[in-house]
Image 1: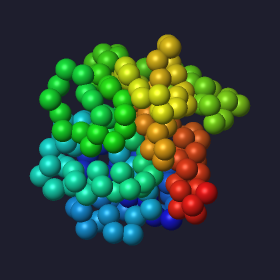
Image 2: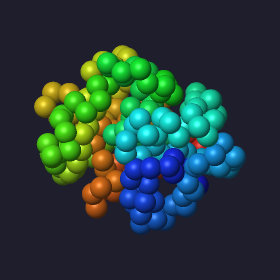
Image 3: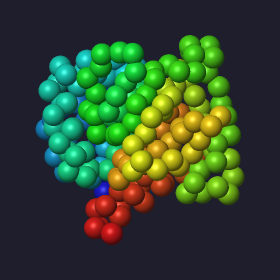
Length: 194
């Protein structure tokens, strides 16, 4: 299995480090040709407007959208979730539109209002997960087919739609690998046709 990580900006190295710890090969995706042979995708946290510009300038919007529509598993964190959202409140934004949610950007405030909160993960409630929220989006509306995997303050902060996982927090900025492990289970089951 090889995971492609959108490699323009943001927490790319942090995702690479976690997958390396889990024994999984990664490749940075900067051009459409980099998608060849990839089994799953990661859309890292970072700055969503900057990522949008890179996607457009590198003609990656359509190839990524097609891969995801055809069932490519994906993990999106923070700004990555904004990139995948079907609707972004209050801003004209070219998203990939494959995750049927509406998000509000920077919903928890500015950088200085960042925080860490204990989260319960539906797929492993054995101990709290340290949810790192940095200028995080808020999921406001979700399609009925979207499963909530974790919530904070009554709002979903991790969702699943088919083989796509979206987090409004940054699991890559912790030492806890459970979100990435769950993503690998989703990706392996998709690859093996289970």
